[in-house]
Image 1 (tube, rainbow, N blue to C red):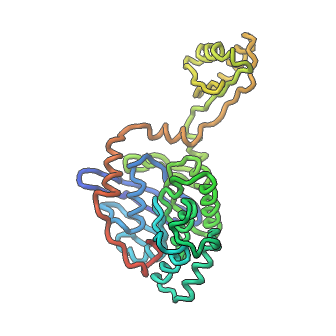
Image 2: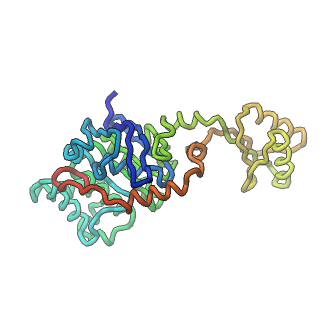
Image 3: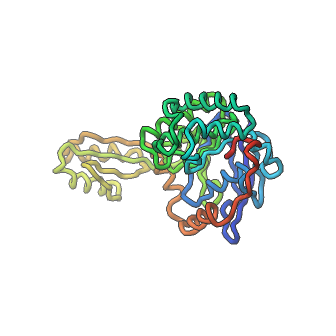
Length: 338
C-alpha cells in the first residue's frame, strides 16, 4: 500500500517535556486521515514536523516519499498548510492575497492573476475578490486561507483544526471543499476537536494521547471497539419518569441519566432492553421510545482519553505553540506552505 504520509517512532521534546513519544501514523493516498486528541496531545506538533516547520528529535517522517528531516525543500514543494487561524493579509483584497503567494511561487504576473481568479471562483469568493480581507466574515476568511494554501496545487494538505470558531453553515461549506479535494486526488491530514467532523470526513482516524497513537481505524471500526451501547427510554407520560428510572436501575444496577423526558444508560448486555420492556409492560408503563444505539465517536473518544494527564497536555500545548521557536521555513518559492 502506498502512503502519502507516514511516521514511525516520531519523537519531539521541549526540554523535559515530551510532546511526541514514538508516534506512528499513516495516511493512504487520496484519503482523509483524521487526527484526534485532547489539547496538548501532540497533534499540532506532529503537523509542524510533517510540514518541515519543526525538526523531530527521533524517529522518521515521510511525505510523498520525502524525508522531512533530510529533504525539507522537496516536502515543501508538495504540501499545503492551513493552521488553526487564518494566515491572510487583511489589508489586501482576496485576489491580492492569492496573487501574492502565486508570485512568490514563481508565477508570472498574468498567470498569478489568472490563478487568483480560478481559486476565487472555486471557493465561491469571486464576488468579494476586490474587497479587502478585513471585510470578510469568518467563513470567508477560512475559505480564502484554504484557497491560498492550494495556489501551488499541493498533493498533500494539512488542515489543523480548520473549522474552529465557524458557524454550522461555514463548517458545512468547508467540509464540501475538503470532499472535492479528495475526489480530485489530494490527501488530507485533518486535526479537529469536532467528532462529527471526523465522522463525516475521515476515511481513517488515529487518536493521539500523551504523544503516541492509542487507537487507529475507520470511524466505524473505532465505534465497534467500544462494547458499551446506549439504551434510551422515553415513557409516554412524564409522570412515569421516576418509576421508569427505578425499574431500569433495579434491572441494570446503574442509575440512568436523563433529560427532556428521556432516560439513558450505557450497557453491554443486549438482553437488557427486552427485560426492561417486559418489566415496564408489567407495571403498566407505556413507552414512546426504547432504542439501543451504538456509541458515538464522542463517546469513543472520551472512553479512550478521559481526563488523565491534563496538566501535562496543557504544558505541551503551551511549549509547542509559544515556548520554542520553530525552524525557519524555506522561502515561499520552495513550495505551497505559508
